[in-house]
Length: 229
Ligand SMILES: N[C@@H](CCC(=O)N[C@@H](CS)C(=O)NCC(=O)O)C(=O)O
Image 1 (cartoon, helix red, strand yellow):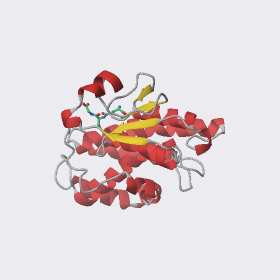
Image 2 (tube, rainbow, N blue to C red; image 1 turned 45 degrees about the vertical axis):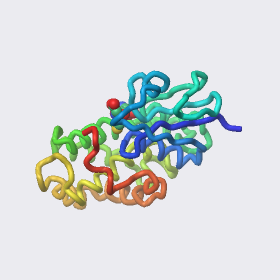
Image 3 (cartoon, rainbow, N blue to C red; image 1 turned 180 degrees about the vertical axis):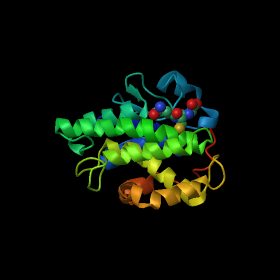
């Protein structure tokens, strides 16, 4: 029997969503436990993650009640680290390709999408970041995209899982203009992304947004405003 996997998550957390996407795409059995971030249980910081953040994954050890975690399981934190861990634990999932050059490309994509889109996008939504920085980041990441349906190669990888929460939030803000940025900038961004300059990015995003893993992990109605933003 496979090792136990429990994912401590929050349904509105984009970082949790990355990990849940990878688990679903890998067909990995896991138990999800929703952590109430507005009233965090004491056991979560004392027994699961001292930093108190989701996602956190427990791996191995006995199958216990998630509210009474075992000291025998490994506790893995930070969404991108967890993505790599899942690719290691499920080597046949395709979450990382076998070929070293393709693996490096996936990792470069994860790094770039985190620094150039994830950070600027969440700053932009919170009214803290610039429109131009976000657009430059999207352009940079577009330059890394290959020609197929996936970020790298012909299979869903952690590169796709890593950027998906941003793609779906980009869709929401460009269609609704919801966010703490100046009124109208969300719609403007949407128009810009529809232009020929961003055709490759938009085509890729549209394909990823159709995946059932994405639909299973995103609740558009409840996502804005996020309680902790
Ligand atoms: N860099 C972390 C960020 C995780 C993070 O900020 N999680 C938020 C939810 S989106 C959280 O748990 N916030 C609760 C808190 O800080 O108390 C990752 O990639 O996993």
